[in-house]
Image (cartoon, rainbow, N blue to C red; front, top):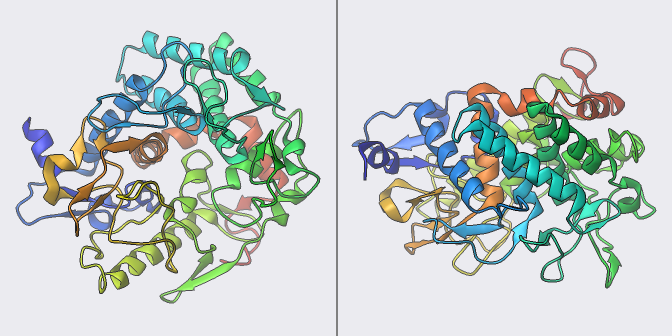
Length: 419
């Protein structure tokens, strides 16, 4: 193992995906280094994370269709299972980052992107413009009785639009625009003013809805900004925004995993602006601080949690994939953390970076990495370094139009209700 890798494994990294949201120095608020660990700059750490994640998105992808596997063995030993359109959306954005940072020959990356958007435009199984959540990586056909998931389609489309804006290549522009414009957003409202949770051909639409604040901000903004099949801007206001108070901090949230405060921020730039309800960038910062305090409090029951080692969100576990988080307590929390910790050395850091989760109390460590977890970490690491994803994605007129339609304005004009 090279010296850089040895240094890296001494770092305790917690909450990797959310911490760039703070806009603060990572070394002071993100990383807990042991007293024996040599200094590692923030940029060096983020570079290692991004390079490792890029390797996943490059290797664990069908080279013909461009569809990205849902998860893979963390050591690069193969991808079990099926492809995910959400992982593919993160992967398309990862290719933009890799092209900009020259992680592979740029012509190869451009060819991969062009193949992917061509397949998504012409080869994948589609229902009213939506793709199924989990698909066969070689054919794009529905896999394992999967659902049409509006939110996972939104993640895919954010990646598609990022590629369109970044590459400025005619064939990519043509196919990306076709993919976005064909989505029949009103269909997924199913007669309501909020999106149905999902749809299956066997059962139709779910009775549950995306009707409370979460990662769905990007979903509503994409639909409102559509030039072909838009939904009314009033749908933005139909989403409930419950107030949470924890440790004296007030913010918009429901009991939820930490990731709900992260995903939309990967592409949409909510800094220095607000709607009638909140500055969502500041809101996610407050929620992250509250989550850290929540983990400190949990340290009384699980000694592995502390102000330096924290981060509970949907992840792999010794019992399979689990939705857990807080505050308040959500799911069967057992001391697992996301993504990793230094004391376990090479059990934690593999070819594709940190494994998905580990439990320092039991010694369990996941063998896998998940595409959506690597994706949010890579994208927000790049935003922390250069604001590249924000700056690229926000050049899409669909994004800026939507934010105007729902009433976003610069801070200093108007007063958000939950500020």
